[in-house]
Image 1 (cartoon, rainbow over the protein chains, first blue to last red):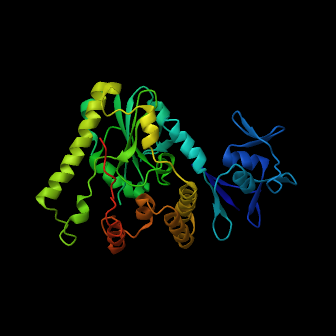
Image 2: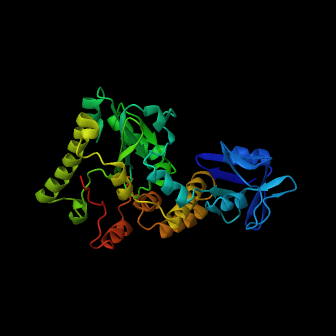
Length: 137
Length: 216
């Protein structure tokens, strides 16, 4: 069963079907894996919608399945998978990352501490935050 | 490294948040030894390095009360003195130790100045300066992070052999990232990625810095 890695989520897609370099999943699993939903106006996430068809891409919808990898590439994001096409990482484009940084709003994230307690940057609004990285290696 | 600064300033609307570019198992002994009272977050897939386009540790970002970046990611006061230490004995000369300590204290003093003076601090950068200083990712870097994410999952869940393939792709695509390279590299008994390959990679920098100098 293919697994989709997107942002921090890992979603096993029981509807997943691989053909060549494409991963097809049900509409429900598209939403579970990526947060994007198929609506009459196209693929939508929050207030943003993009057309479900494009002259420049292979068909993105066929037999009630969605080509999630094709859709992701259509958005301009990187897609990579392992040799056996069982694990798919849906990345984020340099363009999106760069424009977020250029806005000077600190990109938000939510991460666990060692006990599993989650903290997100937005929870700390109202304080000055020194965000510092380190590693054991 | 940050507990003292945090303890003396936690009542001044200031917090430290550390993010370990690491697995929880590897980070745990270090966190438990210091047991800090600020959030110590674990970023096993290096999401923060990707979001902020960071390439090394320690790097730090200053974020003001409104959630705006007032200093983009930069070296948090580490020096390159380690490159010139005696690699057998791990000893540094007194001058090297002094350089290392002075860079660290300069950086921490700048943070103190910011905590005290807020936007009036000379170290706080205007938005236009933040934009011109921040390093932006390119397509290869974005693709490298996708390979790295895949590799971390494969190593953790299923297939360390395949993981190695994607770790190397990530490093090839983003050769400036020590985070990516060292996370995947062989570790010694103390958990440090400081084998011959590490030193060969450091030496290959020649005149280029390992820790970019801080302009603070």
